[in-house]
Amino acid sequence: MWAHITNIWRKEIIDNIRDRKAFTQALLIPLIIGIFYAVFNPLINSVFTARAKEPVTIPAQGIEHAGQSFLDALQQSKITLEPFEGDLQATITRGEEAAGLIIPAGFSEQIDNEQPATLTLLTNQTSGGVFGGRFSAERLDLAISTYSRLVSVDRIKARDMDPSLLTPVNLDVRDLATPEQLAGVFAAFSLPILLAVITAQGGLFIAIDVTAGEKERGTLEALLVTPASDVEVLIGKLAAVFTVSAVPVVLTLLGFWIASALLPESVTNGAVLPFRVIIGAILVGLPLTLFISVILMIVSIRTKAFKDAQSAATPILFAVMVPALAATFVPATNSLAFLIPIYGPSAVVGAMAIGGVVPANAFLFSLLGSLAAATVGFVFAIRLFNRERLLYSA
Image (cartoon, rainbow, N blue to C red; front, side, top):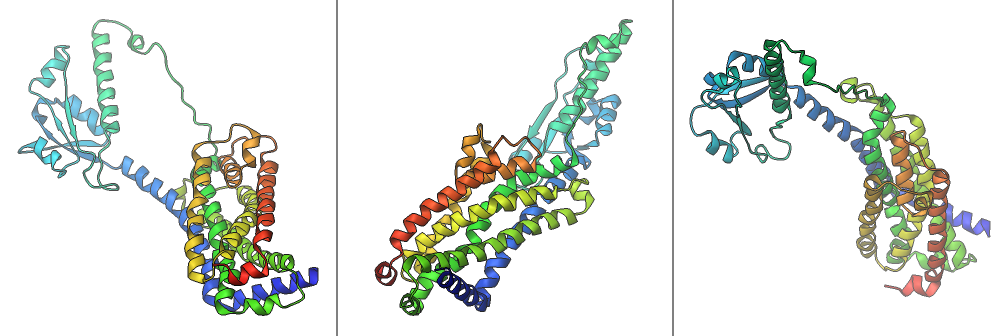
């Protein structure tokens, strides 16, 4: 029995290695996706972080009413008011400017006379597109709050009162996140999705090739006349699909870690994802790969041509992303949830990435869930995998 299975496994592996184009795609595409995920998220974050620290220039009308103390408070937050001539509201409505500030006449006098003063901020969030020059009012709001506090302190001092009366409670904020946890914030979102995608993408081509591909080429008949039983043929082919699928899973996760570790410190802020997270992702990813391989085999068995199988199996790539996305947004509340295929391994990887507490038995349950699902799928595949269905099913 094992000799038949080994021979079929060896045959399928050699055939797919000879098909350099398909084999290269099976290895390179997941690897490129892994590197992309590793670089894209921290890079985007660094871009937005850098943009938040850049000096801001805001078109304004009525700057002459502001008062020097107000302008100095804005300058400390790297905010400069630029005089604007014309219809400021219409300009912002058209999206030509992201924001504008209107300072009413008598603003400075109202402050000096301890009267309420109001500024008008006009914004257009659609200006500049999704990654364009969207204006965030947070820095301006912080600058104005700081200025308001300074004015309040001056008023309190003028009355010979203690300025601490303005702040009866102080909040001492301490961020205890470790560099590893900071690095894992982005990995907690991207790694579960990446793991699900590469388990499906890595074995897609070989799963189709060893079933529908051989039907289309007419080479399946020669294999079915050998002494190997239907179950032995299925196990041999499934072992080949799993082998070829497991390689890009390991390579992609390692590539993800290497790419993230090689990013400059200006992008990562010195935070590096612990290698143990990658090891854990590989361990829970391999049983998941076996389950996805069985699903791909089931879908491919029922088709008669390579293109038909490709069309039927492609939705699996999107289907596996749904539980993975759910794991990133809806963490598991009990250990039994980790038994759910795809969701369980994704949830474990996400929890490990951020250095959180992984519930007891979560790792074991995610492995058992994938293996149990693979076993059920294999039993169903056996019912489909017989000579008549293989040769004549469409």
